[in-house]
Image (tube, rainbow, N blue to C red):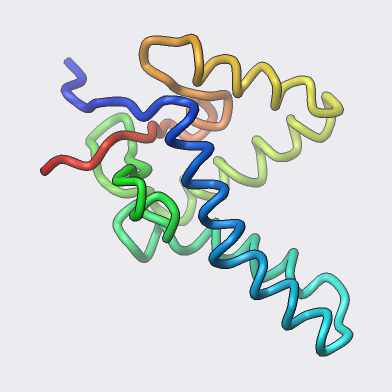
Length: 132
Protein backbone atom coordinates (compact mmCIF):
# COMPACT_ATOMS: atom_id res chain seq x y z
CA UNK A 1 0.00 0.00 0.00
CA UNK A 2 1.32 3.43 -0.95
CA UNK A 3 1.50 5.75 2.05
CA UNK A 4 3.02 8.69 0.15
CA UNK A 5 1.09 11.91 -0.31
CA UNK A 6 1.14 12.57 -4.08
CA UNK A 7 1.89 16.09 -5.26
CA UNK A 8 -0.75 17.56 -7.55
CA UNK A 9 -0.62 19.66 -10.66
CA UNK A 10 -0.31 23.16 -9.21
CA UNK A 11 2.50 22.45 -6.76
CA UNK A 12 4.43 20.58 -9.45
CA UNK A 13 3.84 23.47 -11.85
CA UNK A 14 4.98 25.93 -9.18
CA UNK A 15 8.20 23.97 -8.66
CA UNK A 16 8.80 24.02 -12.42
CA UNK A 17 8.27 27.79 -12.54
CA UNK A 18 10.66 28.30 -9.61
CA UNK A 19 13.30 26.17 -11.33
CA UNK A 20 12.85 28.22 -14.51
CA UNK A 21 13.26 31.49 -12.62
CA UNK A 22 16.11 30.44 -10.31
CA UNK A 23 18.11 28.38 -12.81
CA UNK A 24 16.81 29.13 -16.30
CA UNK A 25 16.79 32.92 -16.27
CA UNK A 26 20.37 33.34 -14.96
CA UNK A 27 21.58 30.73 -17.46
CA UNK A 28 19.86 32.55 -20.32
CA UNK A 29 21.40 35.87 -19.26
CA UNK A 30 24.89 34.35 -19.04
CA UNK A 31 24.50 32.54 -22.38
CA UNK A 32 23.30 35.72 -24.06
CA UNK A 33 26.13 37.77 -22.56
CA UNK A 34 28.69 35.23 -23.75
CA UNK A 35 27.02 34.87 -27.13
CA UNK A 36 26.87 31.08 -26.95
CA UNK A 37 24.04 29.05 -28.39
CA UNK A 38 22.41 26.00 -26.82
CA UNK A 39 24.35 26.23 -23.54
CA UNK A 40 21.16 27.05 -21.66
CA UNK A 41 19.40 23.98 -23.10
CA UNK A 42 22.30 21.67 -22.31
CA UNK A 43 22.85 22.92 -18.75
CA UNK A 44 19.09 22.97 -18.05
CA UNK A 45 18.80 19.38 -19.29
CA UNK A 46 21.72 18.29 -17.11
CA UNK A 47 20.24 20.17 -14.14
CA UNK A 48 16.85 18.45 -14.40
CA UNK A 49 18.50 15.08 -15.08
CA UNK A 50 21.22 15.04 -12.43
CA UNK A 51 19.98 17.21 -9.56
CA UNK A 52 17.28 14.75 -8.42
CA UNK A 53 19.82 11.92 -8.56
CA UNK A 54 22.39 13.81 -6.51
CA UNK A 55 19.97 15.62 -4.18
CA UNK A 56 17.57 12.97 -2.88
CA UNK A 57 14.87 13.50 -5.54
CA UNK A 58 14.80 17.30 -5.32
CA UNK A 59 15.45 20.17 -7.67
CA UNK A 60 15.70 23.65 -6.19
CA UNK A 61 12.07 24.37 -7.09
CA UNK A 62 10.84 21.05 -5.72
CA UNK A 63 12.79 21.60 -2.49
CA UNK A 64 11.23 25.03 -2.01
CA UNK A 65 7.76 23.56 -2.65
CA UNK A 66 8.39 20.60 -0.35
CA UNK A 67 8.00 17.91 -3.00
CA UNK A 68 10.39 15.36 -4.47
CA UNK A 69 10.67 12.55 -7.00
CA UNK A 70 10.77 9.00 -5.62
CA UNK A 71 10.70 5.54 -7.16
CA UNK A 72 7.25 4.01 -6.77
CA UNK A 73 8.69 0.58 -5.92
CA UNK A 74 10.59 1.52 -2.78
CA UNK A 75 10.22 5.26 -2.14
CA UNK A 76 13.92 5.86 -2.72
CA UNK A 77 15.30 8.75 -4.77
CA UNK A 78 15.62 8.16 -8.52
CA UNK A 79 18.75 6.69 -10.05
CA UNK A 80 20.42 8.04 -13.19
CA UNK A 81 18.72 5.32 -15.25
CA UNK A 82 15.35 6.25 -13.81
CA UNK A 83 15.88 9.91 -14.63
CA UNK A 84 17.03 9.06 -18.16
CA UNK A 85 13.78 7.16 -18.71
CA UNK A 86 11.81 10.00 -17.17
CA UNK A 87 13.36 12.67 -19.41
CA UNK A 88 14.61 11.12 -22.63
CA UNK A 89 12.02 8.42 -23.33
CA UNK A 90 9.14 10.57 -22.16
CA UNK A 91 10.54 13.54 -24.07
CA UNK A 92 10.61 11.48 -27.25
CA UNK A 93 6.99 10.45 -26.71
CA UNK A 94 5.96 14.05 -26.08
CA UNK A 95 7.82 15.14 -29.21
CA UNK A 96 6.50 12.37 -31.48
CA UNK A 97 2.93 13.19 -30.48
CA UNK A 98 3.54 16.90 -31.12
CA UNK A 99 2.77 17.75 -27.50
CA UNK A 100 -0.53 15.91 -27.28
CA UNK A 101 0.95 13.40 -24.81
CA UNK A 102 2.22 16.33 -22.73
CA UNK A 103 -1.33 17.68 -22.46
CA UNK A 104 -2.57 14.19 -21.57
CA UNK A 105 0.20 13.94 -18.98
CA UNK A 106 -0.75 17.25 -17.34
CA UNK A 107 -4.38 16.16 -17.29
CA UNK A 108 -3.36 12.89 -15.62
CA UNK A 109 -1.58 14.78 -12.84
CA UNK A 110 -4.62 17.00 -12.35
CA UNK A 111 -7.25 14.25 -12.48
CA UNK A 112 -5.75 10.96 -11.28
CA UNK A 113 -5.87 10.08 -7.60
CA UNK A 114 -2.19 9.01 -7.63
CA UNK A 115 -1.21 12.21 -9.56
CA UNK A 116 1.20 10.25 -11.81
CA UNK A 117 1.97 11.48 -15.31
CA UNK A 118 3.11 9.63 -18.41
CA UNK A 119 6.78 10.18 -17.56
CA UNK A 120 6.11 8.88 -14.03
CA UNK A 121 4.67 5.67 -15.46
CA UNK A 122 7.57 5.26 -17.91
CA UNK A 123 10.19 5.70 -15.18
CA UNK A 124 8.31 4.08 -12.29
CA UNK A 125 8.33 7.28 -10.26
CA UNK A 126 5.96 9.58 -8.46
CA UNK A 127 6.24 13.11 -7.09
CA UNK A 128 5.30 13.29 -3.43
CA UNK A 129 5.14 15.80 -0.61
CA UNK A 130 8.15 15.39 1.64
CA UNK A 131 7.53 13.69 4.94
CA UNK A 132 8.06 15.90 7.94
